[in-house]
Length: 272
Image 1 (cartoon, rainbow, N blue to C red):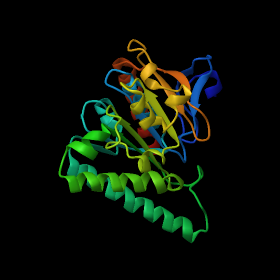
Image 2: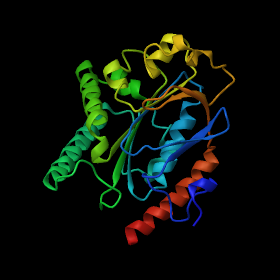
Image 3: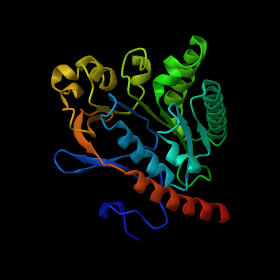
Image 4: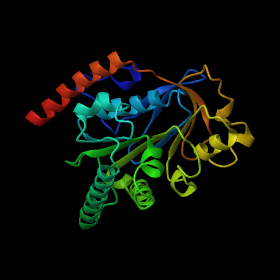
């Protein structure tokens, strides 16, 4: 069987325990991140290429028979091409989004209770349980636009809990927004994301809201990315420094093909 080292997809599908390919660094090396037991935040102005990064992550999850996809799409069309593969799909519906996060919180608590019973700290690839990948786009619509202020605050509280506690229980949060501001991404929430990917922003303060305070002053400023450099971003990983990268691009035709292939993989899993 061919391996990820050859930059190909195994015929039996991928696993969420394998690295997720996002693109290439400016030095030519591939950007392959380990998303299991971690979360990722993507943000940047409209047209910066954020959707490309998001689709790469969703594509990996879709090709993993050991992943349950939960898609929350405030615009309804950004993740719509993956809808047939999702176990849960929520459009611009704050009530539905809150219900989905509450269900995830309950499942997370159930998994931790079971881990405690068997005296373990986290799930493993050998466990007969799917990892849940919850993908949220557009974050600002749920946290600051739709519904009442109480509903928005409740959404942020639930999301913060999932990001803070979900990793060891097999709950991965992938969140994206085109409005990188302090009211959309509070520091207490941002700092919980192990990976942060900043695409072009309008100001250096917006860049710091994504990556963390002080990075722009050190030269890591996503507002310096040229408008024509679509898909270029600064990726910050735990314990490291932001690295400039170019996101791999999936056309709609690519996504349609991947959806068809992923559907076959998931059908085989169900039959088995």
